[in-house]
Image (cartoon, rainbow, N blue to C red; front, side, top):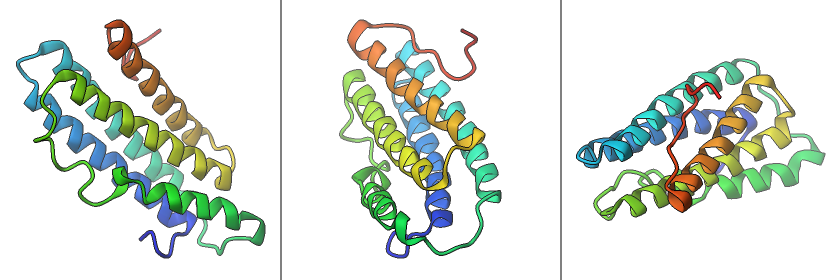
Length: 164
């Protein structure tokens, strides 16, 4: 999929990424079930990732099949390079055996959220602003901030369902 990357394929990869993220967070939720607060964080992340998957499917419906324009070539190269990140490899989020502590788990979640945020911003650079995509980017950004607050300040995690 990455070799012949088109915008449509990039968004299809985003759908798969959200599925992978939800599965990964679900495994972490079960792995840390004995740590209630941590399990709740991962449970909320599962729900958020599934919501993002649905949103990306909506974005996908609006993306035409088209070749890239010459002025977008560099943006596509950046998008492709981002997609090759270890988090987008087929096995990148499958293994949780090396995650032993809550800090390990939160660190891996933070790295994943940062990588997906960067990838989705690269999609926006090509596609332009779209309300659904902006919602997803804002949510990914809030995940990064929320996870950082939990790591640094031991704050309570607030997912997308939380009313500020």
